Length: 66
Image (tube, rainbow, N blue to C red; front, side):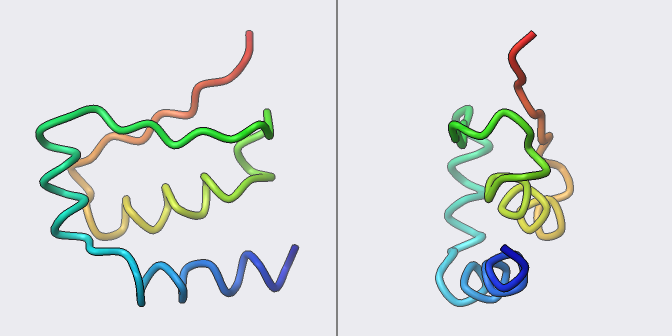
């Protein structure tokens, strides 16, 4: 898991078009889902942190089972 956590941001930097994501996020609601209940144990937190760094105006909310 440690390698994955370290490598995913590097992969996102190479492949994610932040400008396109920003346009999509402004015009729509975006939802990244996973079966892992705890966001800290999942790829979605890594992606959310990366996106928040580049697009601070985009609100990140973790939906959890109540």
